[in-house]
Structures are given as structure tokens and as C-alpha cells.
Image (cartoon, rainbow, N blue to C red; front, side):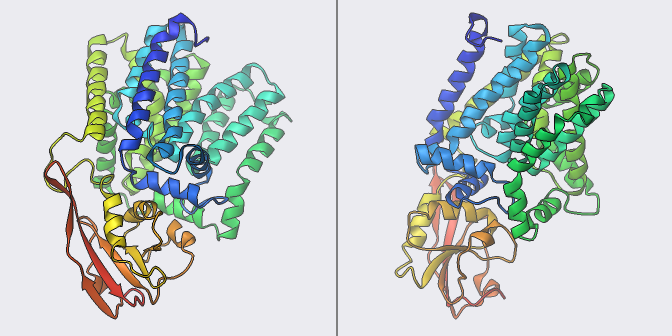
Length: 476
């Protein structure tokens, strides 16, 4: 597939336009909870981390070193990945019957799925896997056709990078083995060429293994509890997980993903069939996990990334009118969402703003640091882990230390260089996360400062109260 040929110009124009739009938007939007967290990975380079493998932090280090530790620098990598992933999806569909229009429509469907317009601007571990999963599938098919050592080595590199991105990448092994067994290519499981592939993949993920050895395997334990957190089925949480996925990926396109999976499983096209096995394993795992713990929509993003485009492709032969509506609806809503992020024109009730997680943290940290007169004896604090990453990120240019005061084991405990005992802590209470400091902390004295509001379009985005805990001596 020669991308620079005239027949592919619609694809290149569209994804280039979208990438430029995202680059323009990137510096005008504050960092969210996860985004800020992974930028902190870059500011605290390590072999691995408590909650995820290290590649997302390493990538952030490279791009923030080039473009600066700011909102733009934090988002360039994700925008590039969105561009390249669109090309891989286009290739997957184009290779079916060499129809450029059908492949382009499939890419449009991907970008009409709401959550991808966020994940292609926010660098997450999932975003890295978008870049790797289709090359892994293409490489396995190439090994089946041409059992060369060089291709096995490439597969080892890709699987190693996937393991360095997210722990659930271990699921990729199962569809590959199932595919080889179903094709009765047993020779591919016993060939000596597989050994260098395994060795290379293992070497690449060594940082994760070494870090966990040094830290009592805490990352593996955390992820086991994080994905499946209970022994009891939670049907309400399961229903919520399914509903959240449908809403997050476009209610008119998300169901097409399952139709795409069904058709791919019945396909005689080797690439589509292997893709279907990947999708079946992933959606089965996350569906099982969501029975026990409410799943976040982005956990299943790889499944929808593969099968919304495939579902759109197969829907072309059934109802172009439906597909035109579904894609048009998704693109319009996505354009409005981008416009709102950039221009913030939509009114909203108090505390219901779409910007509540990404707006105002620079002001919050400025106000908190106004209370700091001696950084050696005073510090800023938050009481919930979801506040900590943004607070630390937006506090980085101040002299004060920032502590997360809770009883939860997490990455912030690893980063904490000293203990806050004996310090005067300026605690940030937000509208959504408020603690009664008298009841929560042991303090010589508690001083409540005046509240202030984070305002946008004459509505309250957040209300902040700063509370000083004098001589902090631990939790009650």
C-alpha cells in the first residue's frame, strides 16, 4: 500500500487535518487525572511504576524534553499515535478488497467514536497498545506465510513493547497460540526461531520484573486487585460498565463492533480471523472482569478500536443510510466536544461542568501556596489520590512539597521522599472531595481559610476550601 499515491489522499487529508486540530487544541486544555499522572512518571523516571509498566512515562519523558513539560508536550505523542493508528486501521480494511472508499469510511467510524477523540489526545498505556496491536497481528500473519528469523525477532520486539506498555498485553499471547493451533501450524510452536523472539521480549520487559522484585511484586498485586476487585458478582456494576461503553464509543457505532467481531470470526481472511481471536479474548476478559468490578470504558478500547471499523465495513453492505447517520452523528458530537474544550462556550449547572477535572488547578495551587511562608516547615496536601497527580503537576514550579494524606498504598508513596509528620499542612478540600480535617487528621490546631470558587461561564466548576493542619501527627 503506497500511501502517497493519489488514491489514498482522502485518508491523508482527513487524518492530517484532525492531527493539526488536536495539536492546536492541546495547549488550551488542562491535564486530566491520568494525563498528569503519566507526566509525573516522566518527572520521576524509574524502571517501572506501582500502577503500570514504564513505557508511557518514558515516552512522556522524550516528548516533554523536546516540547517542554506543559500541556502541549504532554499530548504530542498521543496525537502522533492517533495519526499512525488510523493508517493501520485503514490498511486492515483496505487489504480486504483494495477498496479505498470502504477503508476510509472505516477510519471515519473510528474517529466518530467519542472516546477515541480523547485517547488520541491523551497519552495513556492503552494509547500505546493502539500503536502495537495491528502490527503484531500483521507480523503473525507474515510469520505464517514466511517463517523467517527476522520476522520472529520483530514479533519479539513488538510483544516486548506491548508488555512494557500495559499488563493486559499478556492477553495477546493467547489468540496467537489459538490461531496457530487452529491453523495446525504446529511447526511454528517448535521452531528454534521462536527462541530469540522469546528472549528479546523477555529482555525488553526486564525493567518491569526487576522493579517488582525490588518492590515485593506490589505492581502485580495491585493490578490483580484493580481489575478484578471482588469475589461477588455485581450485576448493577456490570450493567453500568456495559452502558458506559456504549455511551463512550457512540451508541450507534458501539453495537457494530460486535457485528464486526461476528463477521470476522466467520471470515476466511487470515488477518481478519486472527484479529477476531484477539477481539474475542479481550472482550471476554473485560466482560468477566466487569462482573466483579465496574470497568472503566477505556479498558476495552482495543476491542472497539479494532471492531468499530470492521463493523462499519460490514454494515456498508446492509445499510449505508444507517452508517451515514451513525458516523455523521459521531463526528458532529466530537467536533462540538473539541469546540467546547477549546472555547468553553457551553453553559452548565454549578459543579456539573465538563471541565471540572481539567480546569482551574493552576489557580488552586497558586492560592494554596499563598499560605506557605516557610517551605521547610509547611507543605500542601490533598486527601484523595485522584487529586494528587494534578496537584503535584501544577505545584511543580513552587518551592513547597505536596503530600497525599491517605491510608491507600499507591505510586505516591513510592515518590514521597520524606514524611509530613510535624509539618503545617495546607489541605485542599474540593467540592467533590472534602474531608473534615478535625476528624481525619491529628493536628495541634485546625485553621479554616475562606473558600473560593473556580468559575467558568458564570457557573461554579469547583469550590475550594483551604484548611491548615498545624503540626500534623498522622491520621486519626
